[in-house]
Amino acid sequence: MPPFIYHMILSLCQLFDKHKSELDTSATQALRSDNQGNLISWKQYLQASVGTLLILEQSFYLSQQGDHDAVSSAAQEYKTSDIPTKVNVALKDVFTHYGTASKNEKVDMICNIITQNHMVRPEAR
Image (cartoon, rainbow, N blue to C red; front, side, top):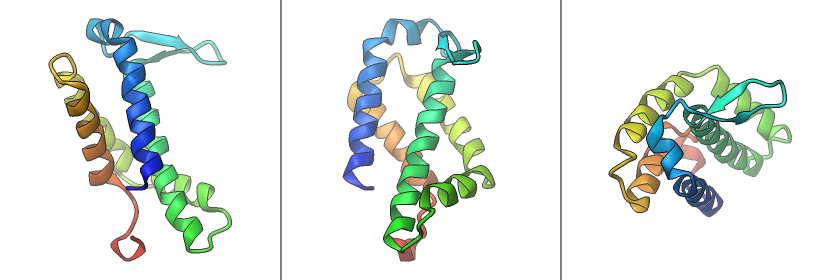
C-alpha cells in the first residue's frame, strides 16, 4: 500500500474520532448536506472515502505503467467490479465494532478492507 494511502486512512480516522459521539448515535445519522441538498450519512461518507482510496491506489499503479488516463480508468474499473458491494459489507463490520475499537484497531480494519479489495494486480506491485 502506498504510504499516502495509509496517511489518508489515518486522517479519516482522526475525523471520525473527532465526531465519535455522532457516530455512536447512529451510523446512518446525517453528516451534512451535499451540494444538491441531500443528506449524507457517516456510513456513506466512509464508503465513498474507501472507494476513493481504492481508486487512487489503482490509478497510482496505472500511471506507473504509463496510463495517461489512470484516474478515469481506475474509476471505471471500480464501478464495474463487485468491489463496492464487498466494501459495503466489510464496512458494516467496522460500524459494528466502532464503539469498542481503539484508533489503531479502526485503522487496521479500514486497511484490511482496502488490502482485501484493492484492484492492483500482483504483477503490478
